[in-house]
Length: 226
Image 1 (spheres, helix red, strand yellow):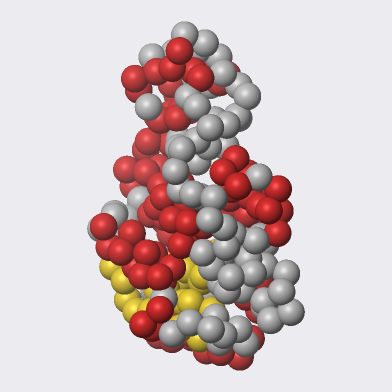
Image 2: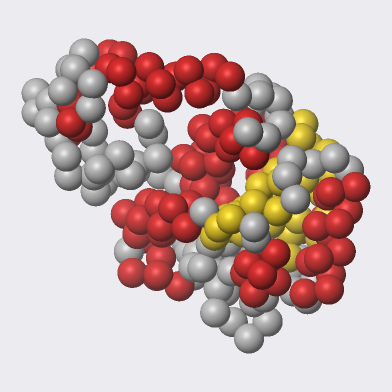
């Protein structure tokens, strides 16, 4: 699990030196980052600029309406994929469970499995049986010989969400630089659930959870039922 390209001691979760909120300093039209901070700036009424980023308040109103209709509580399941960790040493899995619970979501269960396709598919079946609508896998997304989470999940995807991996790697690059390209984090849908394949390090899972997953989890699950 430490070979995901995010086993970094570079303080992955602190500071944003490359994407300070320049639009708060009188620029008003900061297009540099094209909404890709994962912070949903266009939803912040305090900006007060109808034309900021080329969008009107109508777009923000639509997005707000989508979020208003989204389920507040989502049943989630956490799977740690690792040959070296167990329940007692599953820091990343615990961070995911704690973050989901703190945001008001239900953790339907969690497990630690080996970096093995059959074990990963078995964990997914457990999550489905537990009624999970979101399954968060951590570990096995790097390029190591045993890393197989992406290869196991991707063939199951009914619809892949490439934007998740793209945004995650962009945010990660802003924090740790070029090692971010070593992560193959991705997401997709499967039988009414949304699956996230995340790196194994605690810093990486916190980044993905806080910046991308939690802001859109309810909305994503709602879209699955449309």
